[in-house]
Amino acid sequence: MRWVWAGIGILLVLSGLVWTLQGLDVLGGSVMSGDRTWAVIGPITAVVGLVLVGVGLRKRDS
Image (cartoon, rainbow, N blue to C red; front, top):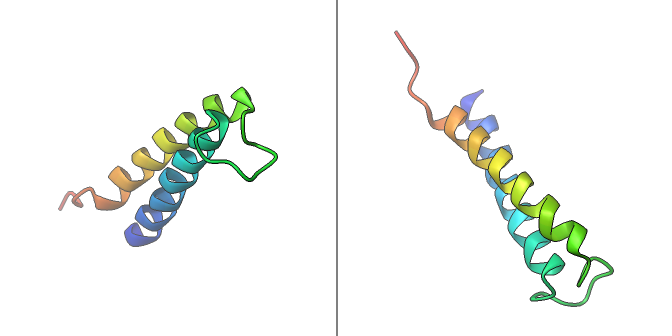
């Protein structure tokens, strides 16, 4: 089950990165491009993803 959390976390980090770049108008070609809302939502999503990756990769206490 831990690999599922890590996988979801990686997807969230990647999505957050793309959303941030689109919000900052670095990545064009989307209705989200240039919309500063996505420049805020993107990093938040990426941080949540990093937390999930950390949960997924954390060693089990035995």
